[in-house]
Amino acid sequence: MQKFLLLGALVALLFSCKNAPDTTALPYLTLEGKTMGTYYRITYGDSLNRNFQPDIEQFLQDFNQEVSTYIPTSTISQFNQSESGIDIASKAYFIGNIEKSRIVFEQSGGAFDPTVMPLVNYWGFGYTPKKPVTQVDSAAVDSLRRFVGMHLVTLDGTTLRKALPGVQLDFSAIAKGYAIDEIAEWLEQRGVQHYLIDIGGEARAKGRNARGVTWTIGINLPKEDAATTDLQTAVELPDRSIATSGNYRNFYEVDGVKYGHEINPATGYPKRTRLLSASVFAADCATADAWATAFMIMGLEKSLITAEQLPHIEAYFIYGAPGGDLQTRYTQGLETLFGADKQPADQ
Image: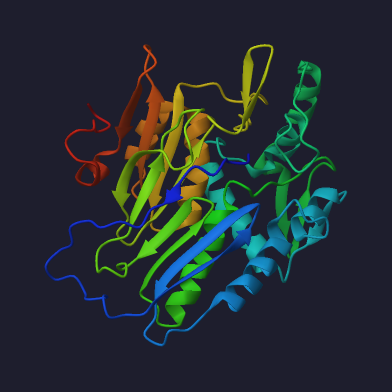
């Protein structure tokens, strides 16, 4: 359930309200580095001009040691390799990811499911060696589906148990967002009230940038030949988070058939849909991250209905029209952000 990193953080000038706090005299720092197979970029204003990079680097190392399937000794790898489960008493990040995942799993009717890992590996998008499936074995897919489902993972005291040895977890569709939330809360505890945190395109912002205006984020153009700097649109991010998921870059093609990395837990196969990109806005980035993946599995129409019903999120969708043109739909709560030239969800 890995997601290709679709958003590029774009700090830009937008009109600010008259009573906006003056941050132009506040020292701003930008920290950059690598994590989770991608980049991180954190910009924040701090009156004490403190460099938090060593602390953030240490946090990211500790975080990955619990949730990265690419680290053989990580907590999640130990669970995946176990026969019946492991003790997770002191693994706060792992516990947080599984708890948040279960919430979105239930709310999405199983569209978001971190137990999809065996299928992700089968289709060549997981932690196993990347190898395209040149001949689909439907029997193998059906066999792996018996290991998928959150009902197969239960917490017994401090022990996370699995019903079958083949059950495995994958937090790649929520971990970046969760890490962003942890960093945001850590900064706020130290008095930082103006920041933009971006890990591989998922982002959370608060306050204003060094120019004294609202942070702005770009949403990538969902075309196979588009550069990562090509944007569909840019949007203000006032004290909220955004995450985007899509299939238009992270895929492979065999005999004219494209296989994307978004695996439908219900069928075991990559989801084929006219929905090209789903961007989700929420207060916390973990929620946005998980729902962006869920919506790609659910498809455009069902996602629009679900997003309008959920009180804690808004969503922006880019899809392919019958003639090949790109079209957009979004929830009514985003109408003021995207302007009159876009179509809200009910039009």
